[in-house]
Length: 113
Length: 114
Image 1 (cartoon, chains in turn purple, yellow):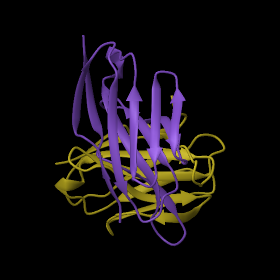
Image 2 (cartoon, chains in turn brown, yellow):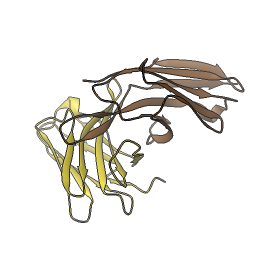
Image 3 (spheres, chains in turn yellow, orange):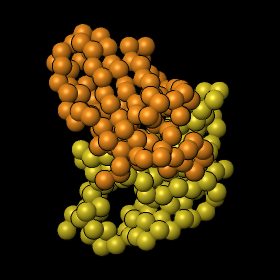
Image 4 (cartoon, rainbow over the protein chains, first blue to last red):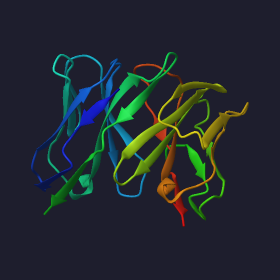
């Protein structure tokens, strides 16, 4: 089975830096993804890590440690529009033939001015 | 716009009824995934099809079934509906299946069972 944990809620102010942590336990690991989801909208892809280390993409960075089953998403220079739910997802085997993205419950980030 | 189209956007029905949700993947995408999202459970993986064949199965109830047609669109059928089936149902597509597969989500179908 799979278990993906991330904090339920976080708050931060405009211009600040926030780190959203994710820990996971899976039966097979084939990559870790972060998605952003604004209320009532579809999730959109942010980042992908399959090897240990940091992946940087503009204001967003994502880190992975496979040995620790740990990842974080780092958001810099926060803007009001970054208020959203951030979903950690692991690609894991779900049956003999297939894998799928298994999502955590998400972290709701509120950015205030 | 992700390029994935889901219809209808909203669906209101009664317990015991049957509904069909439709998904058209991005042009060229062979893989279609269905997810259910409720407030307390988050995004739950239901089922995946790849080029017309079932590839992966999650915690999908026996009352639920899906298929992918030759034109690659997919339908999710929900029967004997219960109040607890009320949720946002997302379809996602990708060009292939594999470790670095990035999913593109449709805007979802909000199902309300009364």
